Length: 280
Image 1 (cartoon, rainbow, N blue to C red):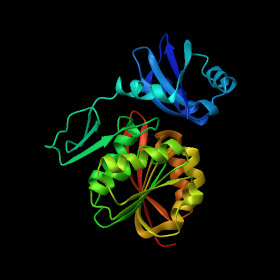
Image 2: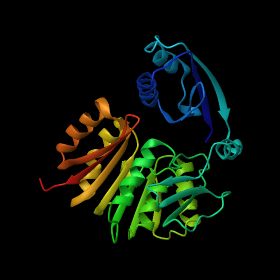
Image 3: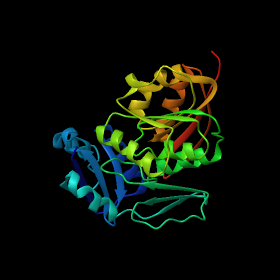
Image 4: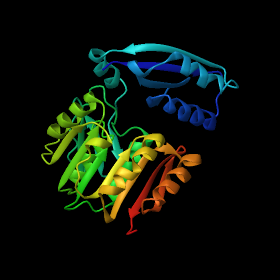
């Protein structure tokens, strides 16, 4: 599956203005964002891109002097693209994330090797970082874990290294589905099953922990499905949305299905939140 990279440049832009624009771009299927010296790059699947929708979003932010360029990133060029931007990452001082072409660092308690292959989730985005922090803070020993919107399966792989018994990783993108399987093998994780699809392929079994780093609208649509397979007393960790107004919307919807807010993390207005299922 081919992607487009849309490079945005601005005369001047405040951090809150960038956050609002990124939130609106996510609503029209842009999937990930990388800061640049003059603005940021945004990636979207080629088949999902409609320039008319992009221009309509920019018209809502007409106070910004915005220039953009669209570039196709075909599959065979993706490795070159991410290799040029992928640097090793350390999470919470004890988790080291690297690519296949970086040297191993065995002094870290947890090391994860990621080969994105056109899927997203290297740990560098704020939402992935916060989700990994939550995993590192949580006891996963012997748990059954559901990883929704798994991408590279970096979250499921870390859960496995933290002692999870079984992990089901689900993504609707076929490239992500394949990437999850390959990355599990790279990390010698043998208890991760990758499924291709969305909420309709969630196994009808009970999970101790659910990880869902997607976006607000998809989460709102799928929360009921998550709650139906989460054990009472189990935890669910969400990310992929902003503090305002998204967190309140997520929290309100969760309460309908017995998911009680516990706490949240915040980096640059991106949020990850922890909920626990209570008996209705």
